[in-house]
Image 1: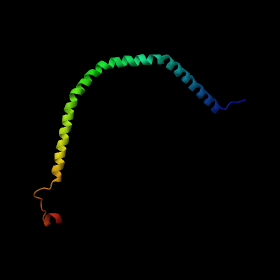
Image 2: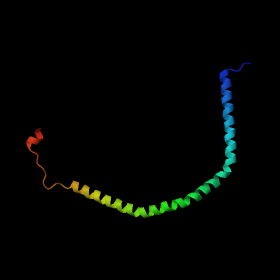
Image 3: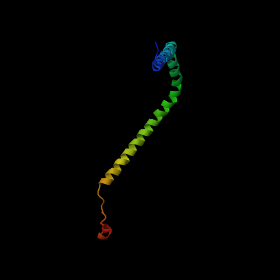
Image 4: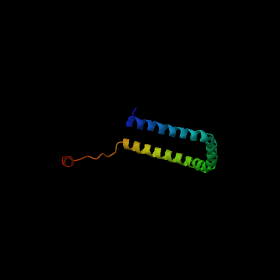
Amino acid sequence: MQIDPATRSKVEVVDEVSKWGVGLGILIVALAPLSIPILVLTAAFLVPLLIPVLAIGLLAAPVLLVRAVVRRSRGRRRESARKQPHPHPQVRSAATTSS
């Protein structure tokens, strides 16, 4: 009985994929118990680095809040100034509008 070359290549692909799957499964089972300690150690290492960032953020927050309030109030003043009609509207002459 002859095996078609296309069928043989499909069988080889399935065989190779199953080998890779078994290998990755072995690695995951071997390394999974180490993942929690690695995450805990990483978090413990990063906490001291986050303390200065949090301190700077707490100091900068009031400054940024005041700055945002001032910008908003300036923007409202400009909008209200735009809505009010100008006391002396410019009158265009017929010569400027016809060109």
